[in-house]
Length: 418
View 1 (spheres, rainbow, N blue to C red):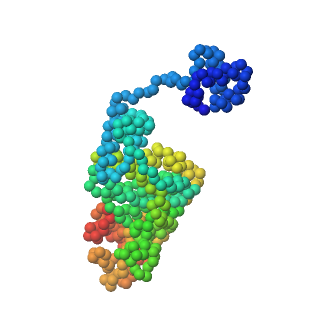
View 2 (spheres, rainbow, N blue to C red):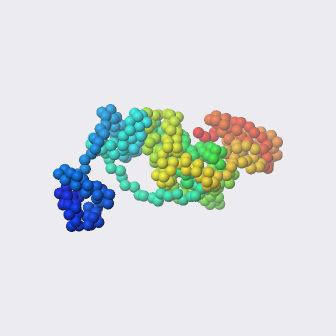
View 3 (cartoon, rainbow, N blue to C red):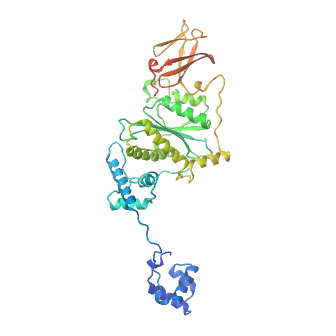
């Protein structure tokens, strides 16, 4: 019992100790009654013997409580007012205050260190407090034993900045074992090429993982009866591979599909963390441009990977990732081109097939291409690699041979890539 003064009065403790001094009761019984250990017991006996007139067990603070300066108090209220204004903004879609964010914001922007309980106390005293809604608790555990064993990949469509006219998409890839965020990029439109670009950057930088974990979005998976544009009554679910999955097959990566958002809990939690802080930061900086928002996202991603201790693993993601590499707990394979491919542009690309006509040419989106070294009536695989917003490189393959390379305007080809 640490707080003796809350359970007994000075007179009660004094009478019990006096009975011990007179030899009327043994020490072990007194310790059990008072709920104290041996060292504290003898300390109390010594205090009673040395100064019986002033003996007390009441707690007295040795140092005065630390008072916040007026400037800190002012900044706490200022940030709480901004939080309230943000909560009233319908675009933000936030339902509660984030006192931890305010604590970090005060430290990073005002160089003022304040505890979360202190901020909450000021919030309650000034009417800036809302109870958090109870959420269904899901199992939070690491199900893999190696980095690269499972990479979770997903996108989120949200109003990341109340000052932006449109919603943006956040594409993210995260390692299951280390919780290290490999990729986090904002884009105005979600396309197959955006997800293929994410694949390219992760695989070329870290290696080829054992498996990817995604939902059943049409970019990742063909589902019969749902994807009506591509529907073929002779094709069942997964009989047709979308562009993104074709890249995974070329890289020899296993694809696992989640059947619900709850099944993707490990990536949903970082989304909520990043999404919450993105909205609050963009609101304070009045961000309306996606490039400005990306800079904020880069800063948050760096903090998540290199500074924050993950609540499940109890480790900083980057440190856990590096420990796994040193401990040879990795299922990443080094990326290497498999013959007959000549470049990464033949792997991380969009694909389409055409038949060469008698004039040794093909038509793609009403644009004709004369193909060098081609044979009439052969099938040609066109691998399209966008070089930038305006131009793409078209690589023509036939009979496992690269027969021609050409460049074309994306707008002329009617390619909606970005």
